Length: 272
Length: 179
Image (tube, rainbow over all chains, first blue to last red; front, side, top):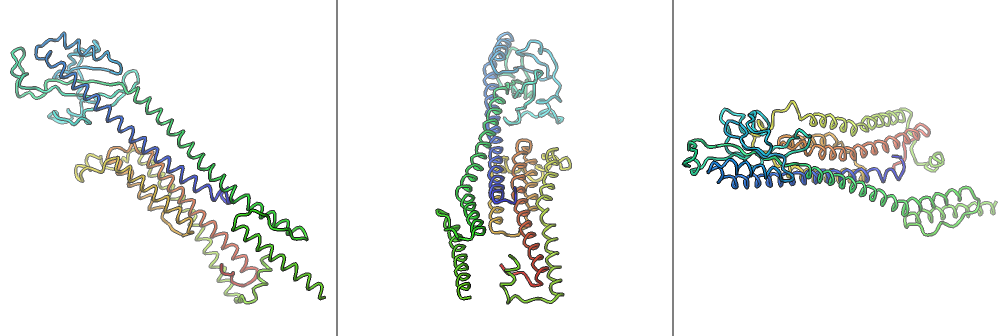
């Protein structure tokens, strides 16, 4: 296969074109996935911000029932895996899932350790660092955001339940969004890219093969048949018509050489 | 046919026996050299596969990216590395195909393993190796595959030509005609 003209023409072209296309698709897929992931983080951060702003008044008033209702309603939204609020000790005080309330969270758990790995917990994290991805108990992908609930002058001076002004973080809101839709979109994109790669590969190989066959291999075959016939038969046939220019020159050259040789032979036979 | 060609070249000098032996020795050495060279592309490919296995397991022997970036500063972003990877792949393929067309002997395969290892390491320090592993792997297989084919093809043609020359020298005792 590698020694034939077709192999020599097709192997490097096929390898180079298909390989480069695969690399382009892989890089493009990685960039798209990264963009979608960033978009999802921004969406989750905005949602967390909305929840914090919506619940702030209820927190000031220490209206636990309203707060619990807001958290439960947000948790019932399609695509929301969990919503919970921890207090400073890491105890779940509000959650969309009633079974989680009053449960202690391990500070070394994923999502907590980012801030709690040092002796002093980190109080300011960038948006991207707040996000984490994991699989929930059902085995479905979840992207979660942990947003701190900061102390403010209106909290530390409130009459109802005063927090010390030195306390920077009062608690944490943890919201998780299901990645099922995102994973499904990425899987579809992956399949489409594989199909696109295969189609491009078939078109490239097919196109090059068709052109080579039409313009090179068939004329070569004609020339070869002509040379073989000339060698077998005594009389010299005319060169085949409609050959590409280069092969036409070879065929005519061969014809002239054979013709001259035949003439010389005839003349020498006549003189003898 | 070759005998006829030899008869048609009365001006070709018949070299002394020792000269013919010397020529045959030279041709044998050249064939052996080309035989050795023909596996160079495959060796580079094997080395790249070994590096890829190390990258797959996250370069366990390298220090953590955080420790290195704390000293050296932030690496280029994954997106910049990906753009450079695409440019590199494109240039390497074009260069290899050009060398194939020109019939040049060039032993660049192992340098490509170095460049590709660099890409793996940059992605590792950017902590985006998992997302971009297959892109570097695909690029390596493509570039080294084309390079291996070029080197193997160059050597196969060279060996065939030298064997023909050897046969000519053995049969006629003359140096082979220049192309």
